[in-house]
Amino acid sequence: MQKKLIVAGGALDRLMRAMHEGDVLFEQCRTTSLPPGSCVKSRSEFDQISLLNLRWLLEGAGGQPVELFVSSRGERRLDSSVQTSLLPQTIPQGALVRLRDNIYALSPEHYFIWKCRQLPDMISRLMLCDELLGRYSRPTPGENSSTCTYFKEPLSTKRRIMAYINRAKGVRGVNLARSAARWAVENSYSPMESALATASLLPMRHGGWGYTFPQLNQVLAVPRSKRHLTHSDSFMPDVFWQLYRLDLEYDSHERHDTIAERKKDAIRKSDIEALGYKVIPVHPEELYSFEEAERLRLKVGEHMARTSGRSMREHLRRLDDPELAEGRRALLERLLP
Image 1 (cartoon, helix red, strand yellow):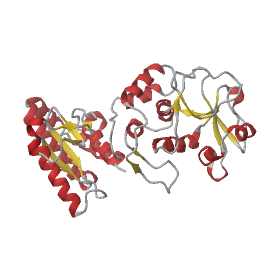
Image 2: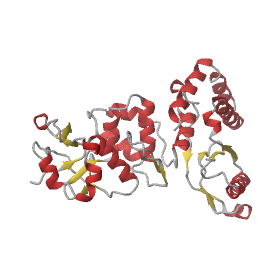
Image 3: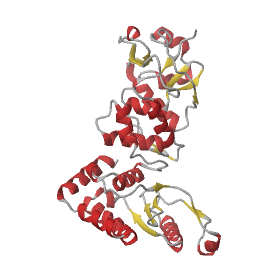
Image 4: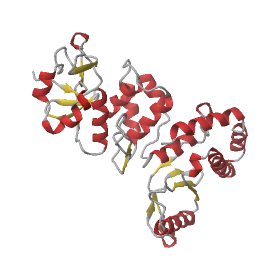
């Protein structure tokens, strides 16, 4: 039996980013059992199985030990060349993905549960989940030269994450993962879009505005009867509430700061409003300044109140509590990159 090389630790963080960016391909596997002795646990075994073109990901940087998973406590070891972490001998189906030959990593779904045990609070876990479900990849922890990258395929979906969490009963960290994933949004194109959506949907006890879940970057088709009003047959509103006919358009400095881009944004705004939707542009300063973020919150809430009536008015009054305002300030500081 050829042993499985299962990547762990910082190498797994780097590998997950490479998978998200499409630099490393992977496939699902149906492995549910890791008998004792089935995992690589020494440097010599690692050298035999690892492939040269994956060494930059699998090996520890700067002389750090190789980090691997093993399936029994008797195989755990820490020496100058190898550091091991423990996976149970029985794992849920979908816990692993195969990179090539006998080289494996945690699946994005199991990686999320595993990382939840290491992250300090629910907001950190939620931000990780949003990234796995989003179209951007944040810098790898501890690697200062890394930058956020964009326009990537999501590593998972909320449905897959929740389904896996339900299969993974008894796995350490699963309850932490569940409590964060319930508030996650998918299909975000940037950390700022995620921050805006998260601030709006989280309940007041977590520092959020307590509004309903928006959709991010979903296709909005133009009805045939209104195609003469717009320049396109469809749009993808950034942060969108169909119920309230409301679209928040996040205009970053990187992609919306030239005269041509501002003109394009104005045409897009006019087109979406011609379909009967309210469009509120959001600029970075409106999130980094708490006073401006509060003004944005009130704009959104007032529009929702005009649509839904008294229940939203009552909710807005509850949000006036000074203690809740401090919670909102703290949440924004955590969410913004």
